[in-house]
Image 1 (tube, rainbow, N blue to C red):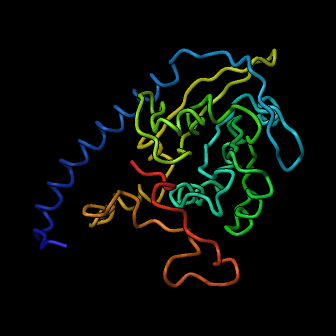
Image 2 (cartoon, rainbow, N blue to C red):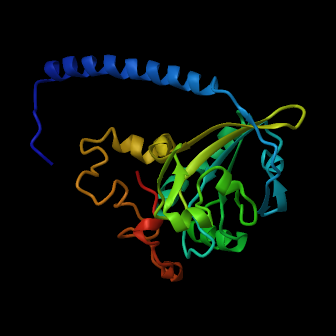
Length: 255
């Protein structure tokens, strides 16, 4: 870390107050942007999607679990992967603590991957997670919400992601999609976000942004190159579960 300017407390306080004014302006701007997000038009979901879950077959409507709002995290775990994406796992380490609180605000949170359910359950048990995680294997959900490459897209190396056609080096990509169900049972797609738009889900990043070194990712091969499954960091407990191999770099979600 480069040497940093050190000043008297009065000078520090003046600088901090000036920065506080900018932080408050950013907070107000973020609130305004969030309001505009909620005002976006919706698209009615007419297609029937059926998932494999811990309670058997479930439709998209079933996933709401009695709530009117549903947030889906698209987790990168392909049908033949031995382990989930380390970066998606980094995000998923933040999920369990939010589920009960979201439920109090009429929101259900569910994770979806294209891997078969037994594969999901095996990796979920390894990581010690409790949130609901279902398989979209056998339906078009991942393809329709542009987080999995179709066979044609895999062959061409190009796919729609984050609302543009781009290179798609991995068969899976991360994202979050939001849905609303009205009193008549009609479902609407209200929002999806991808790439850096998922930063708001990562509490660790927000804490790192408070620290003197920040995220400290400059010079890395890609922004999340430092991230590992939480049981693979130096000092983490090692046991038989550590036999799982890390996915290739192309299987990790980054910028």
